[in-house]
Image (cartoon, rainbow, N blue to C red; front, side, top):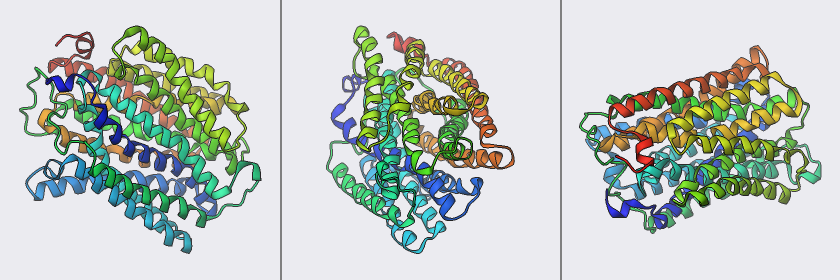
Length: 478
């Protein structure tokens, strides 16, 4: 490993995470669009989840297009045009998708709205294929998952702000008491978002990001990259299922929460946005906590930051909601739940497999508590799933592409393909809700976490058999 790669390249990492913010902003905003579209277009709960299906299936379609183009041109597309150019191209594609919101809003067309979200996510698919392994590559492999966790924390700054801005665009200020929703009001924020996509595409083009990074998760001393395809690695195959169910439980928990709060707890649609914001802020809280090791090697400083980072992120959530004139009283008790996250993160000791196991078990516990209770206790329980989902993406991604070497880009594309789980699992939970109840439907998430716990246990043995032991790497061994 080169000397350059022994520490995080912050000059290149910081501009990279801008795209992570965009992914979060749009994904979380969908959770506000779902109940709005459900009422405006008179949809069932299952039909309303087509918003999630259109958005997340686009990732799969995008990955398939990427692989077809690479096959027809007899070479990896990203390696040919470069990482930086690929990111810029993905942003331009997403910008084109936002343009559809204008005619869709003017004509009140649900299919056209879905088409716009589909194209936005199509661009995100290319961006994610590039950005995730690149974030891991801009520094040592031992802190790769922490660096990806940090990027995820920026992503969740977008998820925290997104629902509030879209809700404001539709309903106005919380203090106005306005309950009327206007489909036409969604076009302005999405057109502004499209302009931001284009601006960042230009800025990235002139940034110091490498077009072809010298090392993309090529692990020192591991000779398993001689295989013919990424699909010949069991850690990737099982990790693909892991990404599918992880994104599924993360998205479905949030996207079905508005219907639960409306039908079972009597909330107005306009009053749900702060709780959706808290759910996605929970991922930010967890990811800021999980990223502290990427900042410093000093153990005492890490211990302090593990308590400072989550409450700093929680403060961002409170500050944004205060600015939007939302009542903060229901959220102060959440500070106690954050302590569970902090101690779970400490127990993981930076090992991605151990963290995946611990957080998956806590996710199961949170969902079961939510299903067994009512009122605000159940809301806090369901919302805390965000805390326990927070670091699962970087854990799964790091474990799945470890040891792939020259097949890393291909493996990354396969993993991005499985983001479709966000749409399909959400639709499945919506369907289960239609035939049972929203409360009962969260059993779908329990099953998703159960698989993730299994993957955490199984992948440790697989990687050790290939000479990859994260406990040894974290302690300085090889």
